[in-house]
Figure: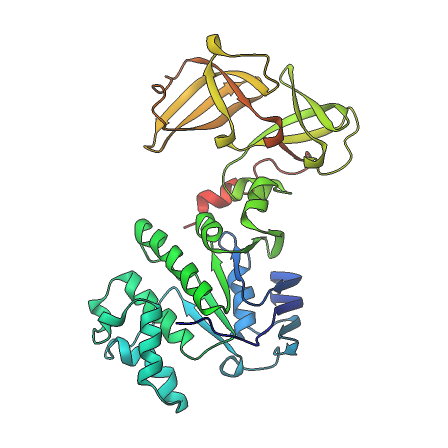
Length: 382
């Protein structure tokens, strides 16, 4: 199937907000979803991501602001008149209809012809051509999800909205469907807006991710940019795992030098949130997989890397990696992920070690922020 040429244009939310009595679900926000992109709204339950999606769909009336598509204000249009379709976590397939008729339902309702050719093309797109005559109960969860996507896409919407569409699938199937959805979006070339609480899901599929917290967008950008350069402790903790260490600035130039637990660490000045005066406070961060770990007796102190000494308190073998917790003057529970390359046996709890990493992999955040922001959200996410 060749990529469709759409004239949909960007989705623009301008000053959009939603309140329920005294509760504000979405604070006024401005957001642009570029035409043809795969855009994810990521956040924990109650952060406002689904409400934002429903305002785009017209299923929730915005309290303030406008929704436009390709420069056309669609704020006042009812859902059935908006050029968008939505796929929900519950696929809502008709159990008495086979796959073909489920996909064809929207076309028949609108009196669009020919039906047979368009349904066949759509089933080929979602790789279900051999399942055309099966009923929903004869399909796996992933196949039902693809039927729901095909039913939504056959009407050629300018935007496809996906509200936690993979939430009911098991882990291995969910990962396969992430790749399938990305393939489908690339092939049809229309805008996908995807709501999810799953960080891996958003990073795997989306071109751009908006991390939401408390009805606001904390940070917006490409997945790699958000992961490598978080601007808040919430993003650092919610999007993966971060070691955050309280530090005092010693000096600032091309590199910023900070004092931590009786030693010093360096990081590029460009990875600090603001000008860094000596004596000021920062939260210094490094991702667990960026850290290497060596027995204290084997450490090389002269290679210019950031170094922290410590003692392993916990070690867990996860197959692809071993995860360590290390108690150190820099922090009580520094996390290290060591890939399982087979070059040595795992180190045991109680081992004295040196943690070291490239200074360029260090980032800094405003010390006034809550160091634990985002951590509880990850644990509470279903």
